[in-house]
Length: 314
Image (cartoon, rainbow, N blue to C red; front, side, top):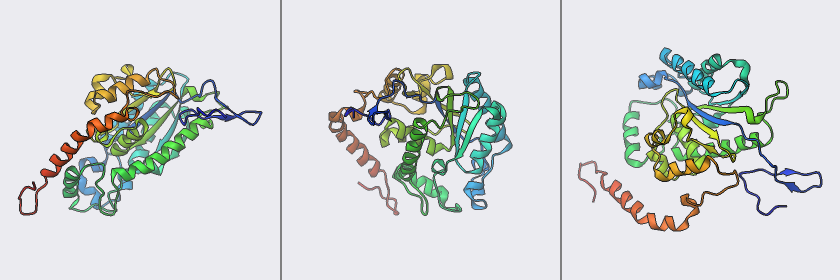
């Protein structure tokens, strides 16, 4: 067995009972993340007090946004490319996928899997009038670690997204995206994940190994927005796709800093078993060099908190 085996490129069992590295592990051509289109909750937050989150539907504007997203997806796909979809089981995400399917042609969709792990962050059952204050408190506490009462933090979402990521990688390895009936193959398939704003960001965080600070500096995708991860020359996925409008300026507006953008540039040509030697996790000294600054920023953030009497905490 090759002791240099990495988790980025699976091994297959050879006829002699050993493991061999495939010459080319056929990953899907793209992974495209799509945030659901405009929902009832996006225009009227009080609807969450009357309707369970998972039953919130799209608005009429949202249905059109979803169809527009489908047209954008159709323009990205080649004439013989297929789609395999994972969708959050919430009504607004499934409605979004339904409208996308009408635009691209449902015959191009190899399969659809409901994926509860890619659902919205749980805010509790029915949201009450105090939710607005809780969201303000989340801003002070930190978006990643703040847990809503009877609900989840983004850190909780990270755990279930990590589990889904491993399922996705296994599906790639074991041929989920091959279809012998139509002759399509994994390399001509695009994986589409229809999900929610925060969950989408957490997926990117997990996939690209972002720090908490990197996560918190990035914005949510807009309703119906496509975030395209294109397979590069070596098999890795990059969000730097000029042909899809995702150039370095777009990444910067999304919240990427210089090292995050450089990582996307690296991924365009890097092999799946490559290691970005300039990424923070590859440079141990960087943690120790940067930590004093992080500590000061943390202390400064805590200093802004105020007591109930209005006196600022030193």
